[in-house]
Length: 84
Image (cartoon, rainbow, N blue to C red; front, side):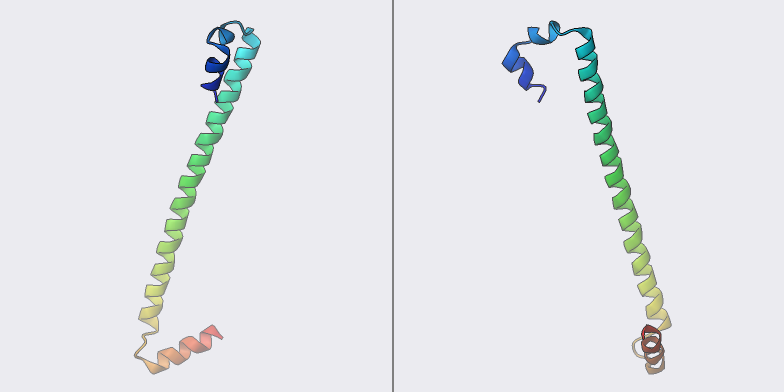
């Protein structure tokens, strides 16, 4: 949106603004940048935690396959009893 202003008002528009307004615009742009960085870091953290969750779930499935093999009838009955 900043590229719109020089085209619409000319570059001299920003040169004639009081220092107060320039500082206010600078602060708002800085806040927007911080929000963008924060959202990006949250997205990365969420992706990492989801990958850990999937890895842990697969590990649990592997452990259950060792404890309750499909070819052992007694183990299958125990698993069915636990799942009730």
